[in-house]
Image 1 (cartoon, rainbow, N blue to C red):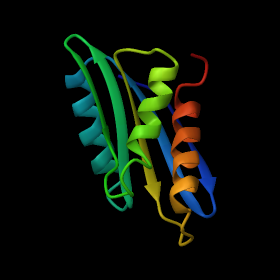
Image 2 (image 1 turned 180 degrees about the vertical axis):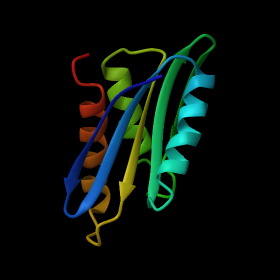
Image 3 (image 1 turned 90 degrees about the vertical axis):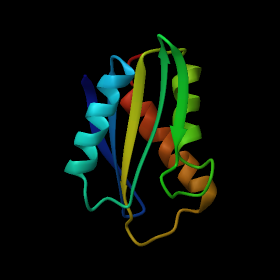
Length: 117
């Protein structure tokens, strides 16, 4: 179930973030809905941690390896959350952020999606 969403802009790139609580199957349904909703997005990156059965995964969706999915998963782990996924949709704004900038942007997006935890 989609429980939190929002948007930030960093150097003309738009980052839309979503928190999804529930099961892995619920996440997969919501992910497909988000992909349909954001057809023109440059990247749809995500990470999740589910406990029954235990599974963690992250996806960079074309961003340089380790600059999107892993930072999102790190925020989930730092907050010690289970049965949650975070999806960050990026619309490229024409200015390259570099690896460090991407890590910061995806970390900030995940933190905003999980705000209050």
